[in-house]
Length: 332
Image 1 (tube, helix red, strand yellow):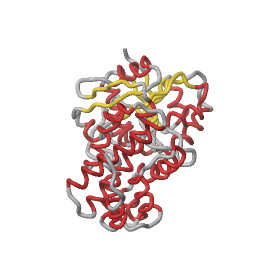
Image 2 (tube, rainbow, N blue to C red; image 1 turned 180 degrees about the vertical axis):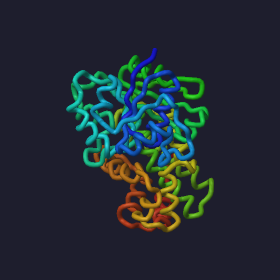
Image 3 (cartoon, one colour; image 1 turned 180 degrees about the horizontal axis):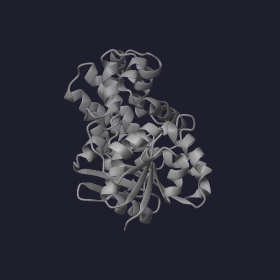
Image 4 (tube, helix red, strand yellow; image 1 turned 60 degrees about the horizontal axis):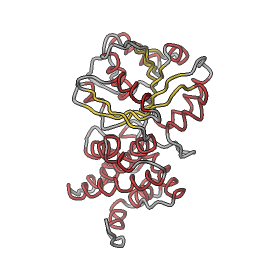
């Protein structure tokens, strides 16, 4: 069934998801922050800053006018950095006249509140929502644009709501599973970025596959511990939004979180690393929220703690690794 859908955010992932929806026969309007970017998409079918060398579908339309974007459809797909979700939702709030069906594909924890993205959207938009769905999983925008096989998860408290999102996105190369564990899906999506930074640090320091495999495995244990304490189903972390997203983010050169960690391991300062990456490094900010959640729920997160010291307290990465390795022996 053909639907009208608004995509809020024209970065690489927002553009890729918009392109999938267009290819599936939907009418899609994507909101850009600048007139220049909207004009580029409309007139040249490109988004060179985020997806260089890729031609976008001719049917994809863009606007830099947020009110126009909101009024275009009853379905809003938020694909923004975590720290932009609340301010943009606050702007959108005044434009909504009937409840919106909201999907988000953000992966983080809000800095000041320690809330998950669905909680932020629900808090800001309240009764202006008909539903909130989290879309997450192992997915690089560049590969989706090449129509490489990709599988992700749509999570909502109501399975029928998740199934609606599944039907919007499913096609021969883009497979969507459903899940009712929003806590698990959102926590997995957020914390995997921290572990990906750690994977990059290890690589930048010159360690090999053994070290990276150990970090990924123990990172998954940390994510699961916190998620379960918050009420998640432990099986969720064995799925696409858990181990799937963790592996791809920790191993791929497409991953900006991995790249950020690699630069730190190679001796870059945090400021120089952020400038070199040039885009939002979600794991850098989520490290704060994860450590605060660990305190709130009394959960041990040694990797997240070590990375906090490296990123925010100028700890030496090599020393941080050595301290992790020299902790008291434990059962797995």
